[in-house]
Length: 88
Image (tube, rainbow, N blue to C red; front, side, top):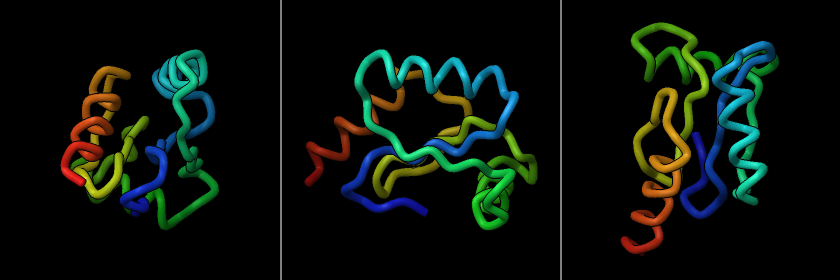
């Protein structure tokens, strides 16, 4: 559900402490990302459920054409982005 060459897509929902922490870290490090509120986007919520065993577990992050990562660390997101760049 994300473009292969764009910034990571971060699926989140309001009130999620884990989402807040990750988004703050992304902002503080200057990491561009595309936020998607799953409470406002039913297709995004369905996508998150499809990769999180039927649950709406957020943050869920997709980097490029890679697999979805449920509740990843900033380090995991950066590693996935670096791996995507080196594969191109």
